[in-house]
Length: 291
Image (cartoon, rainbow, N blue to C red; front, side, top):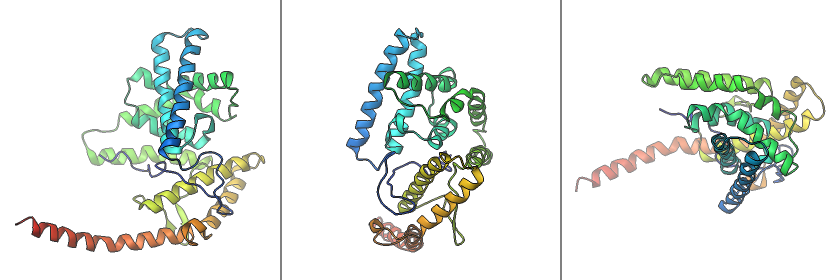
């Protein structure tokens, strides 16, 4: 079964700006393997410190500390490999996506460890705040305190039919839609609509996927900036849409003076021509295999 439905975000990241197309990301950039490893090393160093602190200062049982470390390491790996970020740089969208989608699908741990996730992250972020003087975002505690919601999301996912593939796909889509709707209400979900009658494809070429990831990244950053102005969500949504559509139609130097929209359209046209060529190659390979 395809468990990657609706997971076109978060493979690689590169960044410009909605308004000016400049590469000025401060919350995580496209990273080399060395950059990713540096983020992982930092995270694992923090885990070592947490383990000592949890045992000495909190007096937690060894099993609980081990479960906490497993859960925190899942977050560290997700951010370093998919977002090229440290834990301190996480935004609200990434935390909600990690807790309510990524972790539930990928952890494959025992039930006790998985259900401990919110509490594990509460303690881990608490340690970072005390040990490294990391400021905790005001939206973070409420997300981690909602253990019942996480437990329900996890329960609903695991009760999906594993024998009937068609039923599983329908149930999985509904499970994804519930999270998408919630994120959309909070202005955290990048619209599928691109304007001019276009939408992001569910199955994308690598250029389209990369540009969608970039658009999402910029959407999240702009949302954070607008929230600081104490605007309501409807006003924020209007501002975000205007910036997003302008970015789609603004030529960028790194795109050889094409706009993101033009790059997507060109890639789709090229993809439409590919099947015929592939079929010809397959015929040639089939013919040559006879000899």
